[in-house]
Image 1 (tube, rainbow, N blue to C red):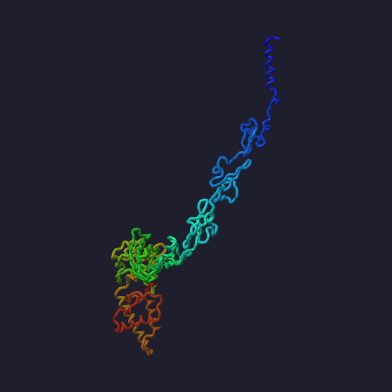
Image 2: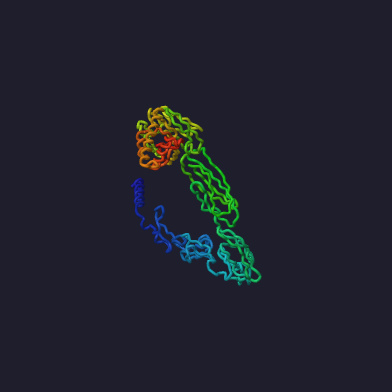
Length: 543
């Protein structure tokens, strides 16, 4: 065999030997672990390793000895004010004197957050003895004597468990004053003050421990503090009412400030002040508050330096009745005059001109809406609407000029008909609406000759009525007869020529009124009455 073959055989044998398992040379690591160790897998998965158990230190195989956790310091492992106790494979903690565990257990391990906290020894009643006053300290406590007691056999502060000192009565406990507390003391002198919510009311606030061993008690009185102004309210949107709380019957000066603003008028600002001096305990003050205004009212008791505030909203009143120049016209296009003064309600007010065709006894409801349709000639309608802000001190308005006023057509009046012209002032804010009305004019559609004829006819009917009455031996006109003639002439519209008087604002006429009405006619015809008071219209305005 040559040299080359031998080398190939040697290489082959070495490869076979390398691939053979080395079972006889493998080490069992777990069998070598210490009794206080555990056999664990390596983190990289390459084999096994021995680790000492919790509470032991070592290499895990040849030795694992107890670990003294306390050797690193009790404060580090158990926390402040604690003592560390080592045990075989573990440890525990206890609190020092004057401290107790936060979990109320005698022993603990701080891994759950348990720690030592100060014990409040002063919770124990009588710990310092009679007359003693306990003061808790961090990890301990000490005692001192209360007011009216003095220390014996020692000095203050003292510890009752280690010192022989104690408290002995001198004047006894501090005198009790209702609703007061001790502001200052020096064993023999006590200064009292009233507690919060109470006011000192005369008397001395000093109690003195006399040589006799008795207190000279303070005479201070503490009475409950009540606001100088209470039960404040606004009555009928006009007057303020409040109750005055005073400790003396002295005169108090009150300053009343009220500020008004309006949602619909950003430029409006009403700010005024009033002063009132009074000794009374119930007060009223009436203010001239403007309508439809939001007010903030503050009242200050000057000497007491106390202020109370209240808010109120005034409502919408009826606007003032317009001042007109009443006239009677025979032209279908009369020009009417109005005189007015400015009012704070002008921004939310307007004038409406109504036309009422005259037909017998009529009633106009000033507060109700009416038709603006002039085609229905038997009904009243609005012939013009004018914003009050655009009206000066005087205004002229021509009825029937065919123009539009505020979206309403001022339609021409029908010739030959009689009309009443009514002016209505309206104030409206949100859902509230108030109005007032006045008769502005009367437009006649008849001629002068016809009116004279009508008056003669009325006089003739009056004479007939008188003749009937006297034939029946009556000294006065019968109310029933006059009542009949009244309605007869009303139906024939003769009475529309009898002139104008201020409108009667009543809901119903009665027979007595009708009797007096026609009695005036008879007196006028007979010449026994020449004044115009006998005249009366058929128009009733209800507000």
